Image 1 (spheres, rainbow, N blue to C red):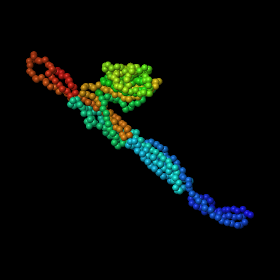
Image 2: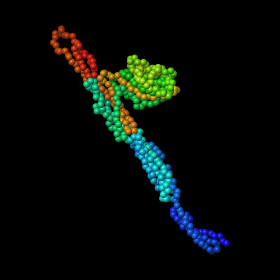
Image 3: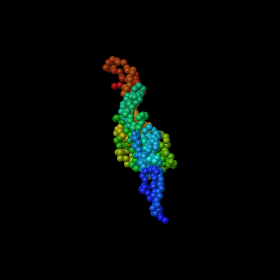
Image 4: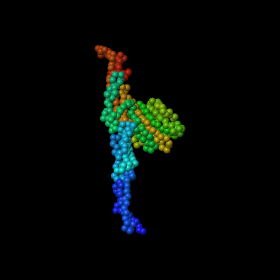
Length: 421
């Protein structure tokens, strides 16, 4: 008997899906043949391969998210990228949100790939901008009262925010000048500077200080703190210091934060001098005179000389003042500067300077601040009454001048002095 063999003219390679019919011819080697058919079904059941999308990222408003879609390939046909979902989730304020796009891929047989996503978060960290009203001088009126309403003294203009169309505007007034906006930790290296500017006191000396309020927070005790006030001309006075350890300088419970609120006055006030070795109550405003040491282990490039009291300052009150502080090296604990506010002495009873801090805040809490100086002056002269009547006398009998019967009233001074010449 012979060997049966089967042959076909079909190449048996298929690039299209569907049913392919194969005709086989069988031969036994003796000239006997027979044919048969076979159905071959080609079907795509493999899902496309999808790449990763762009990475998640955070951008700043008002930038608009720009997504990087994935790509896809398929073993049998063309793969199509589809957006499965596009979801925007609002943030906690206007101008902040996140947007997530999810994609998958399908081939011509309807096979779906797994899905991939990209999330872009939009945040608002940019403060508004604005123009602060110009410094202004106004006069006191009846009862020594000056109208300092912004309708008189001016308000902010040119408010602009990239993400919030309606930022809020507020202001606060104080008769002291200082720094509470760039507060922060104090290091043990070169120290830290906290500048503030005084204006409006033309002709007033730096020695005319009524008081200075300082706030700082420590743990493990106040002894590791030294604060120096530096005038515009480079003279400095040590308010808090010098460094010390042990006893009242340290804190037995280092996990507890302590807030110190000393108010410093001229030495003529008679208050106790600040001394780190003394027990000083925390969290309570207390009155002191500066420590007044005339030397320090710290090197302050801006400092030209030390003075021991406010009365010894020379130079102008106007200008940039500095609070310099440095943490004591090689000790534990932290120091946080909170604020300083210097109150100059008024030049007269009816005169004063108001430092108005304008703040513009957007919906995400970003703030911008700027100061306006409002100078209030008493330019209203006193009013005399009960002046004696005119008289005619001999040159040898000129009466003695007296102001006993003259009275005067003033809008700011309850007891104006009457003189004659």
